[in-house]
Length: 453
Image (cartoon, helix red, strand yellow):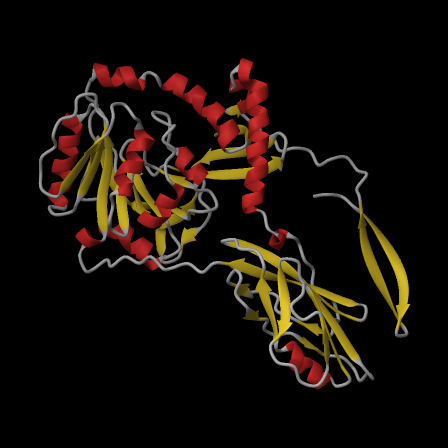
């Protein structure tokens, strides 16, 4: 919070006393930066290459500045409704298409009898006009500010009901603040400037095979993959299975309704996830690891039921034998613009139950058995720079975009571990990947620190 001094001025107008509040620059110290506290804390700048540190910090600051340009809006400003105001105006829900003339709803003045009534409306990212003029005067037609006055309150309100707004900026999503004044009264209300979106709908039919695609990523584990496929076919003989395969020497995976996509060798887990999900044509996909094992408790329909009953949900996880119902919370503090933000991941945190499903709760991230809403997950995507050490990172990137839940009534087994020296040699490179990942978070996510708890 930016501490400010408030100067109160007394003024007299039309026989009444009112207060004008003016914000002055703060002389108090800057608000302390965020911190990651407790065990498991990583200070990310300590994991940057020393010889590149200054250049990386400079480039990150520039990218963060551009990020704010893309994501900030005048609509983020805190606005307080004036008390005892005679001005009527829309406080929420007024949205316009860029560059398109739109009638402003709800403008009116409710004032006691006067010889003359005069109101002014001004904007910054558009122009104003009156569609049709009756009795009364107007100034600034087609400009950023328009003044309407009349000796008749009803005539003035009639004119206010015909004021239009046309944005003069073309953006997909931005906004404007309109200033509406009468005598010493002033109100500010938001105008959302947003291009309308075309709906993307999926026909889910009446069969699970039209609703869900099973996707997995494999690398040097064809024995485990075949066991997984066999277990899937025990319960879902016709459902489509998509496999992203970056093995060093790919082998053909045979079977009905299986799509195997061969990648360049050792591209990594998230690159494979991106490829597999990009080929899904159903509303949902079920992500499974290639060494999982379907059981009679792996009921995809139960996860679909939760998603269909809760349209806001994007990801619903289950539980995995040996790991249980793994889920976690993510708490992000923006911090200051120079040092970056702080992210705390804490295991086994639920927010609240999913309505109608007592075995399911909202959370931030889940285990590797999850049903994803295809279009929502694609919008977040999986960072292909993360090859071997990655899972929480998808949910970090989706924080604020994806609504996630974890359910205990759907589970899957884990196959017994098979010794695989070549596979293990790649997995054993995780320590270097973990170090690179921390440096990646410093720049990409503009983070100062991460705590894993």
